[in-house]
Image (tube, rainbow, N blue to C red; front, side, top):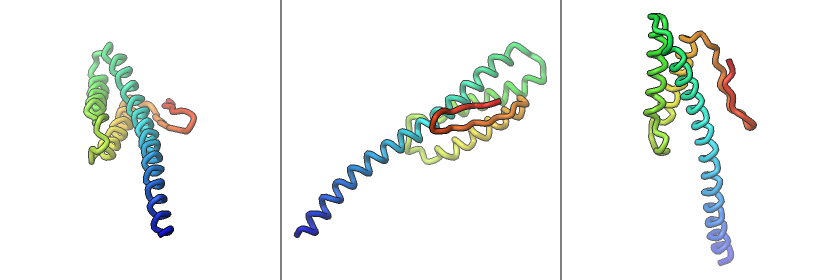
Length: 121
């Protein structure tokens, strides 16, 4: 009897603790992804504004790459954590960001640490 009661109490407590830990972990990783995507969007919008002033043919490829990145970010499913291709889309955005940096001749280094996130050039 004591074994059964102890098992039931332990199961209930473990389930409750697991849910709380899972929520904290999900919030942390969601914030990391949000920070990364937000940084990419700010970068792309800033460069898009800067390059719109120059209308030469050389910048048209850069602008198209930036617009593609902006479009991918705007279509990213922020509100749906159950989206099955979330990681694939995130990897595509990261790849497009690297491509944009290459076209702009900028060396990118996006790091997220425990203290801060940074984008270094």
